[in-house]
Length: 173
Image (cartoon, rainbow, N blue to C red; front, side, top):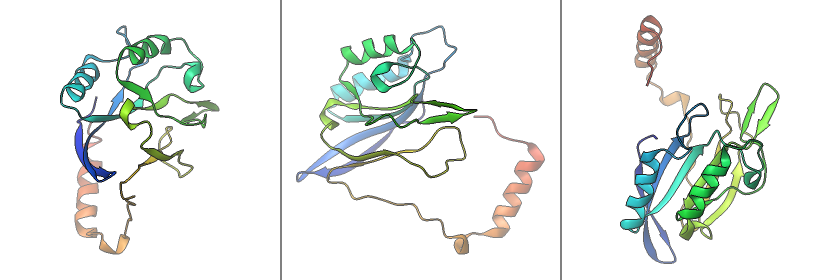
């Protein structure tokens, strides 16, 4: 699981606190699909009255989210015992590689967020990965768009940094 961030947003005149993180559930793990860290974060958010959104490469498949293997059964059982819901809408593939089209990427969220998610979609923009971006807006939040301005690039720093990276090879994190 990657680092979690707490975001503030306003809905219906109230300030809400939202924890956002991503999780990778390894396809080849002997352990159940929900890692201990995710379960601990879910408990923490429930205890602190925080909403939670998890962008999840589930590597599990279940007909509930229109995908095709049995590892998802354990995940569904966990979700049924927790305060999390699958926030995905529709059945647009989120994983596209080598002719395989699957819905393995799911957005998990606190039940209280179910009605707050609007404009949920799988982006058609290239992501440079075999996973497609999932976009949504929280009711009451202000949509933010990242804009890349090449004119603002520090090219000297960029070239030096790229030279260092090419010389040392990729960093594994």
